[in-house]
Length: 195
Image 1 (tube, rainbow, N blue to C red):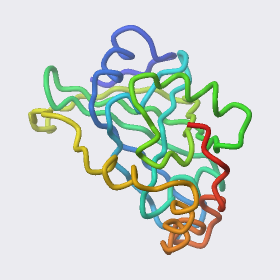
Image 2: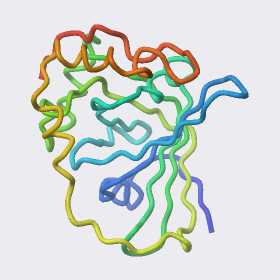
Image 3: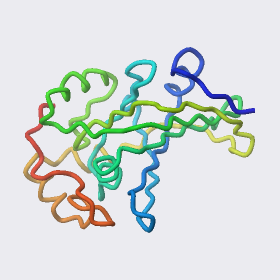
Image 4: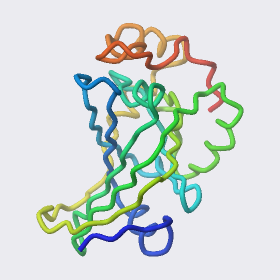
């Protein structure tokens, strides 16, 4: 039923790019550390960079667990489910890295996301993932659900922020600069936005 792939191309790439939501999973090295699982969406915020590399835009939120875990150990799994069409689940297990706004690669990576205006979302970083294992499995137990549209709440909430107020917002949150387990999270202050 499941199959392992050497690269993200063809039917597999088309499937991944068509999904309106995906999930990320990370964990610290500590055996008693907190495992993090996050849903990701917003049309245009995910890109296949090449056959072994994907990336997504990391927007403002109330914690930075994924960033903290990636900074500590780099392990990440991404998962897509077919909520419509043939039952399929695809996972990309790999190594991830947060590319922050002051990284020389940031502007070039940002150009890979022409379908979304990141400015109103408080863009913090671009998460780049290099695949080590690509696998699909059946999604027989995944229900049918219909995608209607993206919510506009995230953009409405963070569009009113500039870099200074975003820094204040992040500093007011308990798990932005440090993860729930005390790992370094989002470096503050944010470098100036180039968006």
